[in-house]
Image (tube, rainbow, N blue to C red; front, side, top):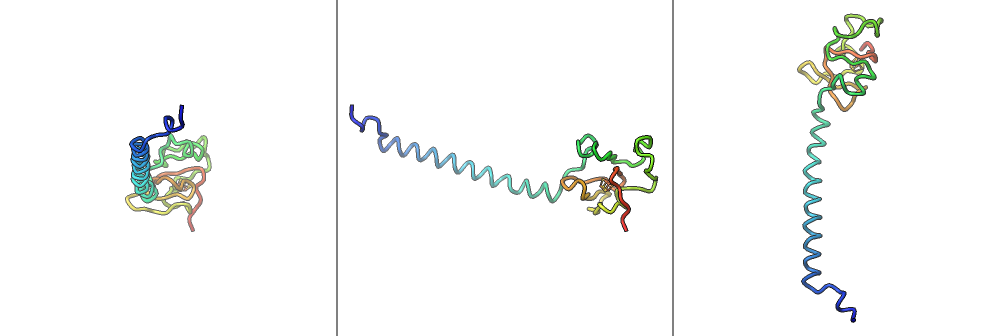
Length: 118
Ligand code: SF4
């Protein structure tokens, strides 16, 4: 048996190269499609859900009037995300929060990390 029987012929080499080119092109195209989505997610993050583990850890409520005062007895009625030092309004009653950088929070919300904006 000679080595030439085990080596791919030119048609097989071309087919292998063509497949590799298609796979690589598809990978690049799909990666490029994800870049705008990632950028858009940072520009327009989703609202923080009260079920989010970070929200639970912070005691976040989208409506500050629903905060459990037995659990947070020092919470005053005028404490809102909108007057917290960590809040930056994005308009429409929502804003970015430095404690939860990947999500928007409700201006009428509250969490245990509230700190009066000066
Ligand atoms: S840190 Fe401030 S802005 Fe962020 S969720 Fe808590 S109260 Fe709202």
